[in-house]
Length: 201
Image 1 (tube, one colour):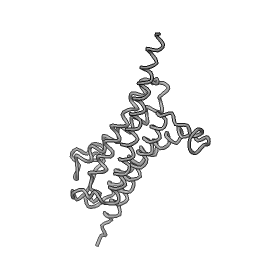
Image 2: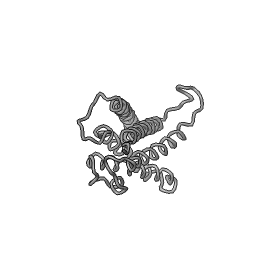
Image 3: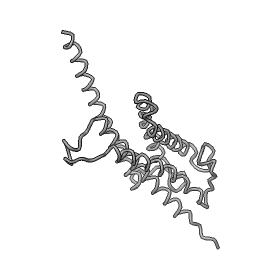
Image 4: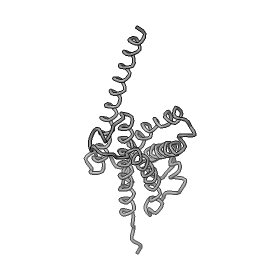
């Protein structure tokens, strides 16, 4: 009798997905620190630390995990996924809508990482406009992660599951950081608008 390895495969895919969410969260938080011109020399940890490089590598890690996460499902024996179901899961055998949103997030993360590699050739203005798509990519990744059923049984979401709690905490971190960044941008805009009339006097 053949032993079904489905639980192990699905658990492995779920854990890789959680690591992907963590990598996306870390990448977005580091990006916001860069936008706020955070200095690790002036502030904690009061030493030189190249978090720009960490931001880049967390992006590569996030993309790698986002690709690896669905590929594991090809080895699942209970619910059969084809490569086409992973690349465009609108007709996938389980949770097509949720998986399609996840794949859209994956493609957007890929576009952001690839354009960042060629940011010098693209120019700062175009690259920065494309880079803001990380918020839409993050929304897709979090939406997929929150509403997907790791057991592929189409069960209702257990919001108090340990994996869902981790995703919720990451989402809260991103939300709070986004509000802080938005307030910082507003304060800078007010300062610029105040300085312009003063310079004309």
